[in-house]
Image (tube, rainbow over all chains, first blue to last red):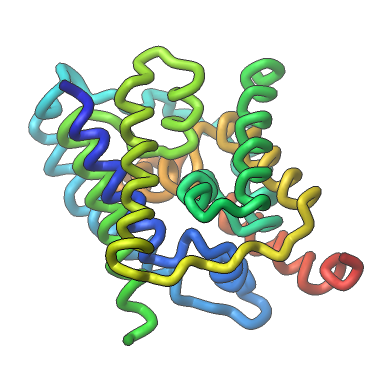
Length: 135
Length: 139
C-alpha cells in the first residue's frame, strides 16, 4: 500500500539528482569553490527545489493528514543543540572532501565506480558508528 | 542548451519528489534518514522502495534520456573514505543532509534546518577552499 508512492518519489528524486548535475562530484566541488573558479550552475538546483517546497509544503500540511497515512511524520525537535551544529560541521567537511552528499553518493552506485562504492560503505560505517557512540 | 536549464529542471523535480512523499505518506524525503532507516528500521519497506526508485530514476536519465554519465572522482580512495565517514557521522548527528535539511526543512521554514544548511554549506565551501589553496598541491 505504502509502496508505490515511495517508489514514485524515489524515481523523481533520482531523475532530479542526475539531470541536475548533483551526481557529478567535479561539478559539486566547482560549485563549492566560491573563492576560486566558481561554477554557479548548481545554485539553481537548490533554488528550484526550495521554491517548490516553500510554496507547496504549507498547502500540503494544511490538509491535516497525508493521503495514505494517518499522520504527518515530521521532526518534532525545535531547539538548536550541539548535535545539530556539530553534525552539520562534520557533514559539511565530508561533503567538501569528495563532492558527494548522501543522495548523489547512492545514485552514483549506478556508475559502478570504485570511489562511489567506497564513499557509500564509509558513509554507512559512519552512520553505524554514530548510532553506537553518539549522544 | 542553456547551462541553467538542467540544474533548474532537476531542482524542481527534487522539490516535487519531496512534496509528493509528504503529500502521500506524510514523510520527509531526507536521503540520509531514509538510507539509515532502511537498514536500522522500523518501517523499512517504503524506504527500500524509495532507494530502488532513486536508482531507477538515475537509470532513466542516463539510459533512456541519454544524459552523459559523469566521470569518476579523481580523489584518492582514502580521502573518499574519510569523506563518507564524516558524511555518515555528521548527517546522523545533525539529523539530516542536503535533502532533509536543505530541500525539505527549508520548505517547512524550520529554523534548525536553516541553521544546519548555512553551516554545512559554509563548511563545504571552506573545505574546498583549504584543499584548493593548501593541501591540494600535496596530494
